[in-house]
Image (cartoon, rainbow, N blue to C red):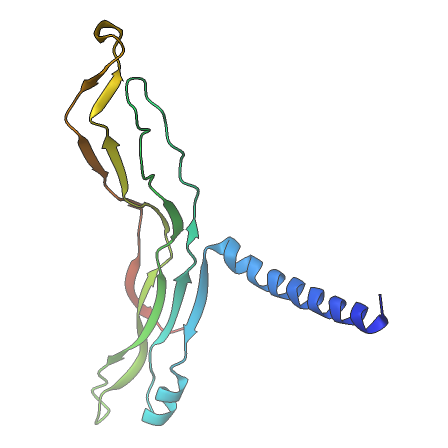
Length: 176
């Protein structure tokens, strides 16, 4: 292998390794914190603005469970399996100045108090919809010389499911 090819391969592998190592902590956390830049608004208006940080969730598709064959049925259950997806609900951390009134001042101005909302990211587990069908024919019946029994066709929709426990805290207190 030529030295230039070897150098190119090394550079590509280094870039891939850097990308994977940079995204691994975010993927392990389940959510990526994103600060909302409001400093420009604060400087242009000449007042204090809220501080906000959002958490953007990373969704991870799971593996659907395979079909199960049931005795007496020609088609497996379910025909279309439900797809599980795991992730987190978006989180938010918001701190806003709470203006107070100073009776000695001509105009209301902030006294340093704040109003805060802290809603951390919560685990989220979902299962997509699925489909279950029943064939119009039953299993071969030995009493009828091996002919299948006729039945009405069946169709069923497996409802989607959503499981999470969300929480948050709203409060007021001194500025930090």
